[in-house]
Length: 417
Length: 223
Image (cartoon, rainbow over all chains, first blue to last red; front, side, top):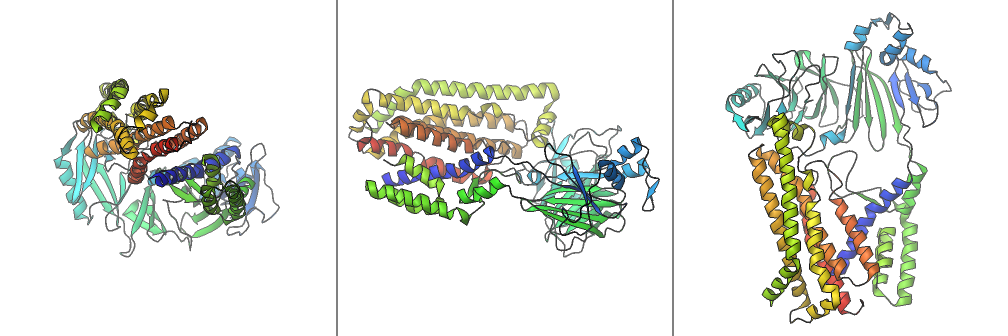
């Protein structure tokens, strides 16, 4: 029992230091984030890349649609005014202010109305997806009596063979609405319960399209409440395709309902008319909203996706008319000097939270063999002290330190008797 | 002998126990009155909306109360043992050391459990009439790490008090801060659901920490 309690003390110390030391190191060595922002120009058919570092003027460069080295492809440097003209879909307000907005670009009329109604700007963080949900969701009224949307009055849950609505006012089940929705969904082939839901619950948005629901078989449905009645529509997809995650947009461009990703990582654009799911030709690039931060920018000319994860950032742009792939850029994540040095000090990093989810559990990352020389050096020091003091505990600590390095060296030095 | 030890532990901790219970009831009442205020001013639907849209559970006021209770009972139970070298007398009782320690910490854990159960029951009963059972369950699961932090604080405070060397006391206290902070990293409801069982096992194992300190005392490693 004595040995067990001592071992527990050392394990706890190693675990605590495994997250505390890397956390402290990161806190003391902040690095500026200089993530480039890319936009595809409908004027010259090239990427316009803007980078800015703290205290420096923005650097604006041009890159070909499928450039392998977008940051160093050429020496062309653009001014902010030149960028505004090349990317009118983003900076049209600036161009209007200087009376520089052309009447048409690439054969499309560039009126403010046209530009605005085709705008999509949507961000999705994995933190919003990877989190615990209580199993109760809110349902809005998509066709309210008044012009403005109002806060939902009912929530719903899934049972084994249906959907059940609960009145929030008195915490009771609305049997009538539950039966209506269950029947409507079953009649469209919905298999209960749903495995994924996406909605933007807010009375401040312009309109409500309800939920994108993935049923138990991976089929995608559009479900909303209109004048208290169910509206259920299934997206046309091949039988072999199973949807993993769908994201509703509800942006200015009402012709687009959102996007979805199947279990193989292929992205689909969801069109409101006819409930069509059109596969985006992203090639071998996989999309996973559960592990990637996703940004979608749509406009009159193109639809651009930005996919960021811990390895890097992928930009993809598709033609707005035929949805063909018009450009693709990849920026690997640059490791700072401090992060590189950390790999020589810490054999691994323990953390309990992540920027990619809203969950807490122990996770080991940044495994580094480069820390092995330091580990061995610390182990030799412990062994030398152990031999000198004839302390078996320190000798055992030396063996442990070969693996755990600085994390075990400190407790063995401080806690031994 | 076990009964005598339990009575001794109760005598030492009775004030801390009642203080902790009052503290716990006060903050539970405060949290509930906060929810009642929201219901009265904005309606019950607002509570549902905030809980489902803003990841709020309305009982943040009790977040650190279990930790405080654990600390209070742990200190009130173990500080007297170290005064006037009473631990030496305790260890001379005709009971094996491990059993003696487990009885002592068992008494503290029982008192804490009673306080936590009362608080837990009040929250459960209150929320059950207000919101859907799934949401009540989510609130309760969110609060479990706080109670585990309370037990952790208790076990560490016992180990720190029974430790005789100040250098090691400081190290144990720093370790306690490190372990306790894990339970407060992620404020999102239900974030800890996946690690509740391992965390419970680790928390139970922490009762052995006091055993390390007492063993060092018996070996003469402590003055």
